[in-house]
Image 1 (cartoon, rainbow over the protein chains, first blue to last red):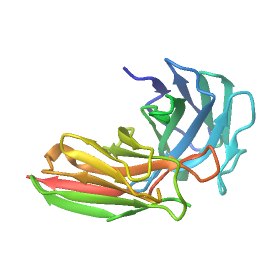
Image 2 (cartoon, rainbow over the protein chains, first blue to last red):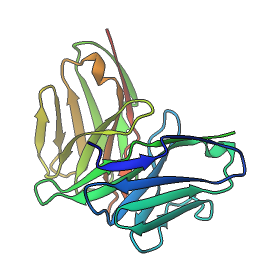
Image 3 (tube, one colour):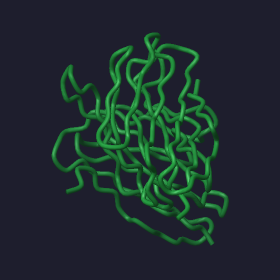
Image 4 (cartoon, one colour):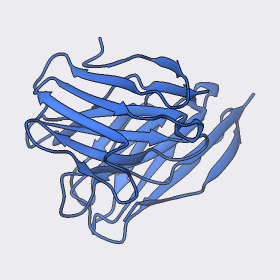
Length: 119
Length: 110
């Protein structure tokens, strides 16, 4: 079963409103979670790194006031797209890192992804 | 700093082989390979940790060169189900950030 749950899977919102996407690690505590955005036929681009109990680290060009990230617990990180516009429509996906030991290294578990459409 | 993949896209007939490369300007701690179907999350294929490592299962295998700057994914006797976009993933050098390569779109035709 899924070890990282992302919700909602699809959301349509009106331009100017805000939408929240949740990412939960189900079977482990994730001190670090990552948020990505993927436009059609493009790679997954890292938006920000979310650390439990501290402010997220945003990538260059990502507006931190527009994409609010909160990592309030070891199992939950949220991404809120504020004042959404049609150009924010995209596939958003979270992931959580788990250290599985020297032989396996860090394994990245992905949420199912969220399709955001802003109309 | 994003790893560069080649080719960008490839079309195969069922049963043909393909090689996808992932190159970095700096040595990588490890490299992961994923396959992504449209609209879905990437699916983990394998991880390579050591320079010179080769590993795989059935018809999909991968290698990591000694300098740990290049990894290749080998798809042998491709099947229709292999279609999708392949990404290599790695921790950005000197950080805890996890980033993806530029991607390779693969389509297998009957």
